[in-house]
Length: 287
Image (cartoon, rainbow, N blue to C red):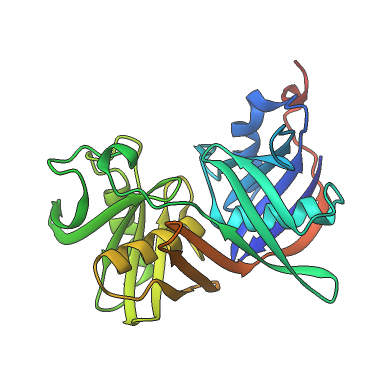
């Protein structure tokens, strides 16, 4: 199997092609094997390119645990670069189909090569029915919760996938996130679980964040999480509509355009290497 390893601010992906969706029923198994950092290639997720009538390509997204995701912000930047580099389009504005709808990606070239990409991430959705979440209010805005012996305030929303933002006075150590993250991810008010973002606001134009991703664990970056964190910052009056998100893997530039109500994210998209992987379970390719 020919694959391409890519990354955006340290959020890494394996990209493969299956335009006819011939192996669709095996995608989850493939993701778990390929993304394994000890026995596979190693990645946070698997991106699969398939045909799409309304876009340049459709992007299926699978987390490293084999679960299907609706959207991935860092992933869609890398995927758009992949489509362009593979000459599947000659346009620098690429349309990508996802389970969260059509995403438009503007490629930014440096010396003829794609270096960055700007994505229209769509409108943040705060209504509990759209997250989804089961709560006694229509929105979860800076609400106090207690899980086991831990108490904190949460703001929850969807940016294509469910996110919960916890504002902190200092960024927690990874060992703390690995403990608290799964607890919030599996909190019973979230029927489809939630991603968890720990956000430290530096000033009105920038913030630091770490993310525990649903289905992937602690990652170096999360694009949908950065957008959710910006929206949470703005609605809680902590930052302006445009801000830089400092994540462990680098920086993401964000803007919530109030005229369209869409959030735009700009960040790097890089190819790490290409290879040929021999899956050790032959039935994957036998119908």
